[in-house]
Amino acid sequence: MVITASGGAFRDWPLEKLSSATLTDALKHPNWSMGQKITIDSASMVNKLFELLEARWLFGEGEYDALIETKSLIHALIDYKDGSTTAHFAHADMRLPIAYALMGKVDTPIVDRIDLTRVGALEFRDIEKERYPIWEIKNDLLANPARGVIVNAANEVAIERFVAGEIRFIDISTMILRAYESFHTAPESVEAIFALDIEVRAFVRGLSC
Image (cartoon, rainbow, N blue to C red; front, side, top):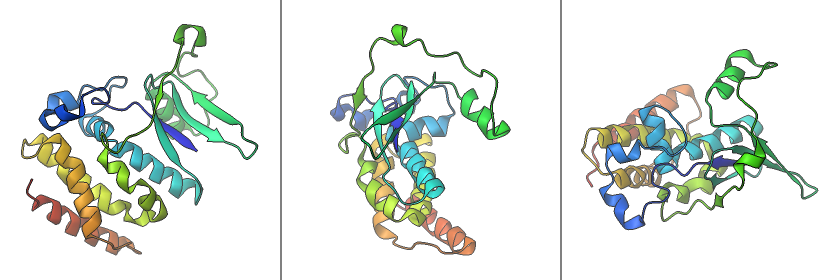
């Protein structure tokens, strides 16, 4: 399975400018209208890391990856053993996944069908670690999905600090990576999850940039 990403607010920014990116800049998503946190997650690519984790938990061990599709018209691709691939096309509209979450089975039109003749061309890009440093831990996280609690806790605190003006945008990924390197526990109970969550949050709150 290959899921797609828009690339977020900074997909076309020169890398040297990222250190000066502001909260306002991070919220300028190119394709979607979403809440503050998920829009920041999109800019850092953390949201896509979580979506890969979701697929891993839902479908078990397998091959999962992501790439950038700049128009957000393809949302996932499935590769088959015979070498063929299918793609899921839909307009960028949150009503579609919400409908499935609420109804389970959807038999009525939720969004307009895509007219491929009007789309013209699609652009695909690799997710580069230079622009999205969090991608460094993708493979290890998919191999050890229980460690997702570390990423989640670190990310939430780092975003709180970014929104509060305490850190830069690029520090979000740095702090997540430092937490991931510092905690190696894979919690095996609900109690252990909450304990690790508290510990990671305290760790990230104490980090300096």
